[in-house]
Image (tube, rainbow, N blue to C red):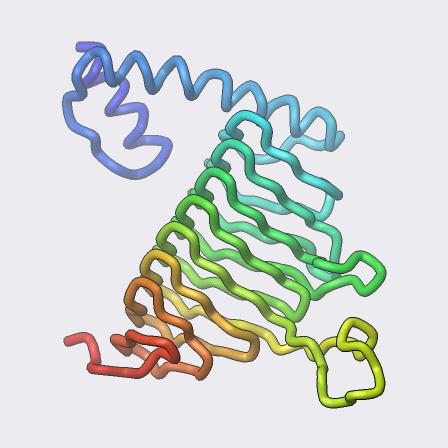
Length: 229
């Protein structure tokens, strides 16, 4: 009875039917979700605005919180860090999940504000993700990003020998991940890359060049080995 009730509530909130859960699993979900909802309410109170429902894990740190916009039912795992300061801040769609120990930064260097990060509806990002939006990162709807995915949108300039690399500045190159993409565990996406909608990138791959829609790509650097369907 309890398991079915909790499953129905989860389906209404998150859009997935969990069926008739074991009572112990259902009670664990309730006991962990209530504190996460409470933390979301406190977050909104500190931001001086009422927004959509959020589920925040323990020790989630969000700097410049007024530059964070999110749709309903955002889930952020514990010990995650958000730096929202930047041109567009961090914009998140509906029913997005971001795994524990993730780092999302609209600006990596605060003296040079970044472009920002955009994440589409119903996208799921695994644990320990790192996304740097200095040059702009856009992730589409219904995407799956595995654990330890790294996305960076700026390169260091290093051509001169008479000036330390740290003093030569950077080159901003936006990254775009289309809709319905699956990036496997440990995938790294380099600056300036566009991953076409419907693409799959194998675990551990390093994407240095843009991929067409519906690509299946693997390797370092990633190469297209086929097309879905």
